[in-house]
Every structure is written in structure tokens, then in C-alpha cells.
Image 1 (tube, rainbow, N blue to C red):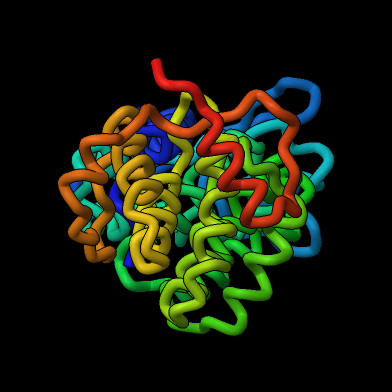
Image 2: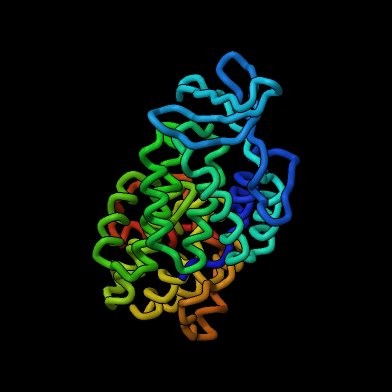
Length: 320
């Protein structure tokens, strides 16, 4: 299942949720009921009840004194912002995320998504944060198919263009968690072709490395997992712990306990715990005694390093 919570992931989720605007109006039984506010391109705001998004227009119904009900329609290009009721529920969802109560977070987010989903095409980039959070939470609660479907839907939005990398991560991870190994391998190869070993995530290498490790192709597993290990910066990107575990296990299976101990010590230096789902190898005491600092390199990353080149990068790191 999903890797242990990563602090950066939680920060992004919380920021996505707490950045969402909302009305202060609340309703104990219908937390998303109440008036919405639509602001047009000229900066004028109109309050009323949202009646859907049809024919490329947002429909808002207002009651205005003697005029009775007034229906306004806003073309997509004329909508500057929509402020929905239900901010309290958004804050509740953020609290659940902060405390890793994933099912409760999902329940709240699904309610908010049903309210705002019909207007997805006209939401601002910041408003879309709720849906990105929902993708993540669905992945954490066994609803990978729904998470992939939502990620695919978000991929088509122009307003989500600068966050498509996150969606690619979610789609890849969703296929992996569903046990669709062939599809995950294909997506992971495409992911690695676009990514850099010192980038903000090690997901693609983690999945390809684990596939090879499970098949006992230990040389390949070590080579793949070492890419982000050798080049990662001082920050620990998501899935780096799994790459360390894969590389350590593969080295041990290949009879190189000295390298395995070196890698295990590198995890300790970086403050990385051994990840759940990986059996930790029993390294010899002599190998552990010779452990060295975490691997790293200032050289330009090469996505096509041979295994002997990766080993050379690790072996040549001087002791501190």
C-alpha cells in the first residue's frame, strides 16, 4: 500500500485545502448548503444559489426583493472566482489530513467534491487544490481506481497544467498499488525518462527497482535504485527510503554486505527509517563496522549509468 506519510506530502495537502476560499455560513445538517458568491471578470460579485454549469455557463439564482428570483448566467471566461459555502468542512478535512485520519478526510473531501465537481472547468488553480488532495486521499484509503479516474480528469484541465507531474505520480502509484505490474512498469519507464535522479521524487525508480527485486534480478534492482540514491540532494524526496531499502537488499543478495552496510548507514545519516513492506537484511557485524556516510555526488546526473559506474560513485566517496 501507500508509503509512510512524507512531511512534504502533508504540507502540500494542507496548503491545498486551507487555501480554498469559502463562506462563513454554516449548516449543521448540510455543511455545503448556503449562498455562493460568483465574481465576474469586472470584479462585481453576485450572491445566490448555484444551479449548475451548463452550456459553458455557470448558473446562479438569486432572490432580489420585488424582482423575485433572478437567474444569472456567467460564461466560462467571465468567471473570475467562485466562493462556495462550506469552508468549515474544508477546515475539518484539513484537520483530518494533518492528523492522518485518512478515511475521515476522504468523507469530508468527497462531500466537497460533489458540491464543486460540476464547476471543475471554471475553478481557479488554487481552488483545484481540493481535488488534488482527494486524489491523494483516495490512494491512501484503497480507492485507487477512483483516484486514477480523478487524476485523469484533472489532467485534461488547462488550469492544472503546472501540476501534471503530481497527477502522473498518482496514476503511476495507483496502478502499482492495484497490482497492475505491467502497466506500472510502462508508466514508470515513461516517468523515469522525464525525471532526474536528483528531482523532487524517486517514485519511478522505486517502482522499477522493486519490480526487479521481486523477480530476483538483483543487479538490475541495484542499478535502478541507486540512481536517486547516488544523486539525491540533502533533502529526502518521497520514496527515497524505498530506493535505499531496494539497493541495500539487492547488494546483500549479491554478496556485497560492505556496500549494503554503507547504504544502510546512509539511511541513518539522512534520518530515513527502514520502510514498511521491505524485509531488512541481516548484515554482518564486520560490514556494519565499516559503514560510511550517505552516498551523494556533485556530478551531472546520467539516467543511463551502468551498474559499475554507479558503484564507482559510491565507493569513491571519501570518509568524513
